[in-house]
Amino acid sequence: MLIDDNPLDNFINTKLIKINNFASEIIIVERPEEALNLLRFGKVKPDIIFLDIRMPVMDGFQFLEEYDKLDIDKSQTEIVVLSSSINPADIDRAKHNKYVTSYFNKSLTPEILMKLAS
Image (tube, rainbow, N blue to C red):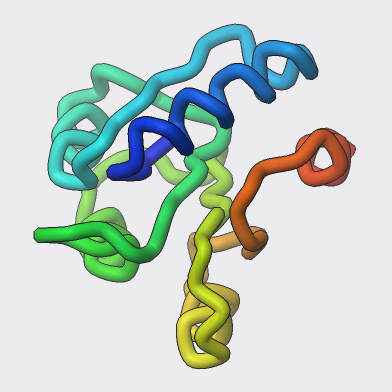
């Protein structure tokens, strides 16, 4: 699942994921609220969520707070923050969230996908 408000980033990341055979299905969501609803009602159960931090209305950190409240099985889902933020406070906050397994600066690369696959 890609959660990012930027359609161009979603397009590029989708192409990269497909070219590298990283996932058989890609769910693109531009609003974190929509992603929470899909997860809450069991419409999706992603193995990995690529999460942007800087988004309008609800940012990635607010998504993580609401994700924590969901009464769903989270044990099989990794959350990878993929953000353009180079703010050390953002990076530290993301890395210390219990659901975030990795933090990478945009853009997604084949090397990042290989690292996540291993």
